[in-house]
Image (cartoon, rainbow, N blue to C red; front, side, top):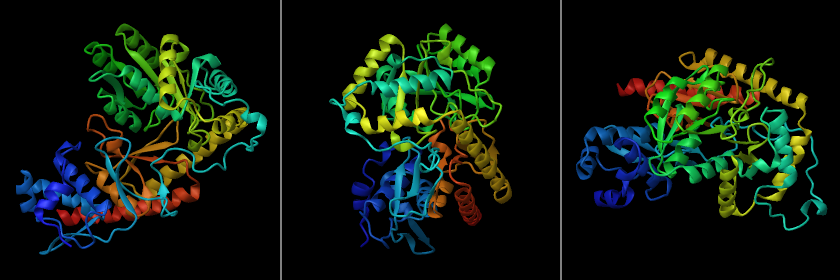
Length: 476
């Protein structure tokens, strides 16, 4: 049943101006939520564009573009001479992925096992893991099991992993076990980011950083990224005009481009941080995933400067479902972070920590080399497939990590990401990783999936791109 104009303004669009992003996207987000939550029925007609524009005090063009976003996402249908109607609602959900303002439409994977998720750059499944004993014995569950900093045996295994595989000398006492790298980053943000405190980072950047800084009301300050990672002169210029900034970077494998910070830049960056009293937060979640056989492990910044806060997880190498991350922080800050971590959830769960400990012990050099080889082959396969089937896309060859950053010949990849979801492929649009507005034409694609899955994904993306091109041509 059609709703009257007052209902749309009071209920469906209540609070739309408080949404992030341009006005048309705010409208699209709120209308999509009304559809998703079942507030409107299939075949309901949306208000006429000019009528809604007058009611909201915006231009008709704003409403037109908002409706076009919904049409391209498949939520509504534009009927010539009749209006805009809600389509029958399949298993879709409109959600803000990882960062406010980056709305994407994705198929609910719980309802459709055929969906391919290239938006999460983590291993798909556990078939690649080294064999370990997964059953628990009574002796494994001795005592109360509450260790706020993490099980001693896991911290010992992590310290050994960091010291010998990632070249970061570490003792168990320096570590705090967290629920993934995202919780580690959130704890650091809670401890150090106050309203308007500047956080210098590369652009594009790790999508999870954007939402974390926004939640603390911090201020992101972008610096360019190229094939050698973060451009240090831009960081130096920003740090010189800011008071006590944080500098966030992932030098071992930049997310999402896969760039490795150059050796000279590494030294320059530490010099800049010391000169301008900046706090460096080093994300090592993708460390150890260099994609060249002869490539030595990246030397962490924290190896030369113990004031650097380092964090990471086992999600990229082992399995994201473990939810095991870690923090390595200077002495005084370590104690404060541990208290924050305890306040959040008292202590990490024991079973996952025991499994993580066994995996760390079992993952020898040969296993790590095989993982890197498999990732390298899948990266090359995905690039080849894109060159053959989507030659208009520009792939930026990553040197490390499980992600491929691709530039599309469009101003904004959001609409295509919506459409790709309709074809059964989830991708991470550039808006989720962009700080300064210059990288909204990008996509982050995971190549951690199997070769067969990557082939199927590119076939679907090709079909989606062809429809996207037809829609663009028809709108001109």
